[in-house]
Image: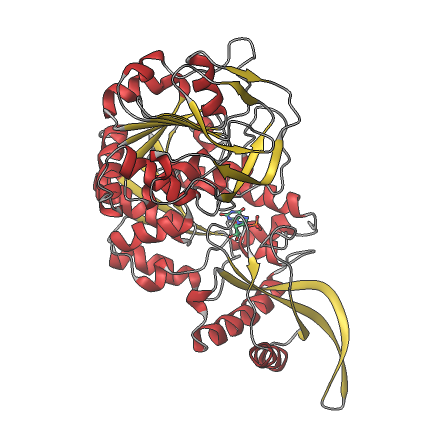
Length: 512
Ligand code: XMP
């Protein structure tokens, strides 16, 4: 395995993902507990992540000294490179002008790190994000590649198999980055690359059992893939120590509730409590138009209902959540400094403290596509695993303006037509997420010989691999025309359909 020491970079999880994609098991541990993890894992290689600190700060985060004596390869990325330089006797300059974004490195000499990939004299695109930089090499190191802003873009001590890189190979904007990391774990560390999702499942089952013991677990099902996969995994680990609670907030899509309930009760035989809370949610949303207020209300009401149901089933020691990695980074500040909240993501944050429960979050390290793989591994039906993501606050955030039962019903019909046409055209799996939104705008139309004055429906479809960035799906004009015609003809209350042509960024996927 590979031990990834986390110094707090926003993209540390991407390192783990790339290593997993190379078929190698890895664990991320905070620098403060790296020593214990090392003893437990006995890794074949170490990766030191980037991070917001400066090695010249008072008391900077460091890697345990023993790591440098262990005789195994070490790759330091960004702060990881700087900390390695500093700890081994080099120096680092702080508050430099830095390099941010796209940059190019010039390869000076051959290096085991990029054997078979890069050759001296070549220039390669990479992604940089640093203020500090190494200015003096530690003994034993030499420079193998340079960039304009970082003379020591890649440094290597081939004898000890220590490598430092200033850029970020883990992000997609370093086109050869994944290959570089794969080369490190396979070629430099000599790992076979035969780790699979089946192994992940086995490891997680053991972890869940170790954490839960004979405690009781409660899991909120949202109807989405994430909570379903978490629930099935936990059920496999601890059986009927798990109870699922499904709070139907009345903001689900057409027939969705029935499908979820039947999958869990009939197919998996997992104990499931289903609560019909449509009225509570719609009453609470009456008159609310601000997107964050909607999100906050729904999150809060969900927690209240969930807590009440959990008490009814006799309480629980653990709360299971299908939290994914993007949820973790988009709503948590990573530098310890202020970070901007784009959207308050709907989760049951706050509940664990209130109910004195510990969290079980087996999917925290995974991206959506990996969760799908795990779902398949667990035998969830393909039609369920392949479902587009659906946000916790449901249709409420797809109805800008006030949410009413009537508007939910209108939107449900339009959305069902749109998705039916997408499926019929064989496009469902090529799209990350597609949905209709109902706008609080009325426009004039003409149907038959009469004037209409009804709402506008927006259609959204994007491609993405992790929901963090997204491109617009380029439908044929004839497809969109067909959908628009059907929606206006079949759904009372809508007389105009528009297509959303905004990528993310600058747009977000959902409209609120
Ligand atoms: P945005 O709109 O932020 O969405 O670009 C990114 C992805 O997250 C989903 N999303 C949510 N999922 N609770 C969730 O479980 C939420 O509150 C929430 N808000 C957005 C969205 O559907 C997209 O897949």
